[in-house]
Amino acid sequence: MSESPRRDPIRALLPWVAATAIVLALAVTAGFVTAYLVASGRAVDAPVAAASPTPRTTAAPTTGAQTPVPTNESSNQPRRTPTPQVEPTPEATPFEHTIARGESLSYIAGLYCTTVQEIQELNGIENPNRIQVDQVILIPGGGCE
Image 1 (tube, one colour):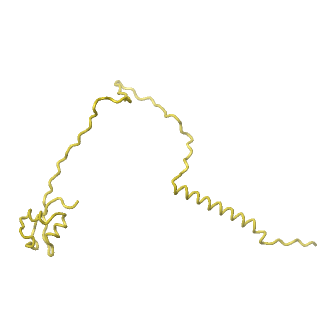
Image 2 (cartoon, helix red, strand yellow):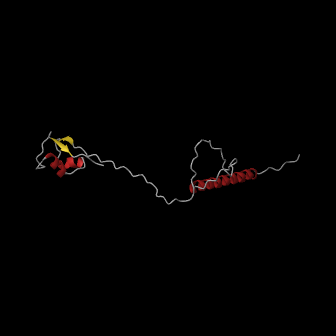
Image 3 (cartoon, helix red, strand yellow):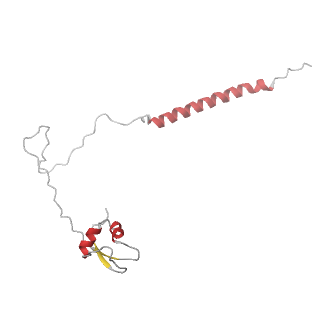
């Protein structure tokens, strides 16, 4: 009997390894190309199969009155621009604040985005250090914006 020569197992795997390397290289290249297209915003336009080069015209409904047709010629007549209506700004009404322990006029003024002087003038306070706990004072309206 004749003995068949034994084939080397490494030589048997060599075509499979080469095919796998080629497939992986193609997949990596396709991934880079896709990432580049996405990152650069260059998308391929989708094919338009049923687009017509000219717009379709439809018959307009007819009525007894004719509508004026716009022209491309400019007229010498002045254009009317609507004048915006001025709405009066409502005056901000003062509101009450009850002074709590530890509050000063400067703290209250900062709380409501006003000044100590405005609070003093509105309430007739001569000395800003002479306020008391549970005293109700008026705060100028408007507040913080």
